[in-house]
Length: 149
Image (cartoon, rainbow, N blue to C red):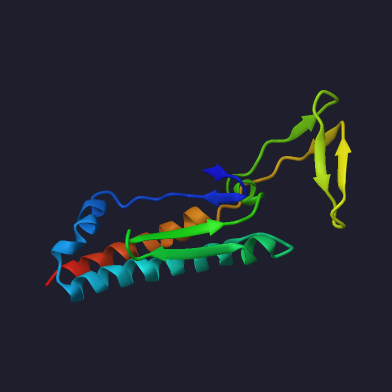
């Protein structure tokens, strides 16, 4: 999903959401293990995503962040770049003609307007989904270990 300059990918662990929402039914030690598992996996997904980024400037890697909300038991990994979705999913070639105006900020911060632009196709280089897919079985194992006596 794209919103503003942030790129969000939301992944779910079916069935675990209910168990995690009922964390108050667990003892303190179990609750801490669940929190730790989610927090640790969130950081690992961010690191895995950053290591997979094909970005020459390093800007996308530098702006890939993670956070953990202890109250919601929710981990978030974000790629804070206006081009993150293009890297993850790729893009078709686009030709914009005179009816559209293309505005580009150059390296000096000067806005330049063009009445025609040729934007080449870009192949997808997924970084978020593979990072999640690698971490998912580890997260599930850690959650199972946390809730089982």
